[in-house]
Length: 433
Image (cartoon, rainbow, N blue to C red; front, side):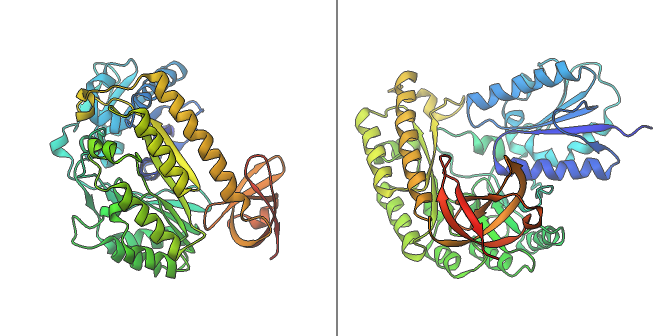
């Protein structure tokens, strides 16, 4: 039988990327040829996202595009949108199999078992009650950085979010197994691991271990020079975790901490588990231990009930904290969540204007954070991409640096002097060693 070609299309979070990479390895080990997402393929796998209605629409459009491009290809859809709306996806022309998150790890076997593309799309394992398994995953292919999935699911049930229904309850692998995966990543030559999960800091629900236990164990893995925590809830960012990250030469001074609103009233409506005072306390604790830390913050605007005064509180709160970056999302109604029936809907035009205000604030704060490094020296891990004769890399605290391209620096951590900042907020560097 001729080698069949398969491509992968990943939407959404870093966790999905780690899972898609693991699925791809299964297909390659089974004798398939992995081809580029734009290439003609016999099998197209989509790992979907459903964080917003826009994410759902993006997936539907992608399915239709792939079917037009590869009318005879088998199309398999998994991920969060597949978990939440399997029959909606199954009705799209070209879809052959829809697989829920609990059995995502079985996708390879399910696909090869399909004998024919005729008939209705097969829908498998999309009941929320079945979301109990843990699909172990880490990414490969990037020469410098890997994403290691350590946790899945979430027990928080925030008023706007479908993640609990798409991913199930919080669960994790044992630390010993994750250490073995990190060792495998190190053996493949990657220098940096991004620790990912749905509610990463909630690690340990399954095994009785703690997130801090995990960090300490990963810190001892030889060959990995850098770790980043992809995201952590403010109420789970303890003084002990902060102190450990500050003391470890491997854990980078880089934190992604969601706030979602700077109004305590809106935080209450959202069913978040902290106040603005608690959030400010955690940011202050990070900066006391790591004054140079990159802090990225998620924020939602236009949540039901958000008045102009609430938004101004959010804006002023964020301006006062002065993070390095803001990830800004207009509120998106998700069917089945409490927020759908809440009063005080915010007009789309008002939400759009508020997003623009925060984007302008973000641009100002990010440039300010990057410009502070001009004239200093730092260590940069360089990547393989070349654009316009330049190569790029990141400092430990996630400032992007560019130098003239030299393939000898790929996947190396080099000492660099920051000479100036360009119009894209990239630091132009001079390699010192």
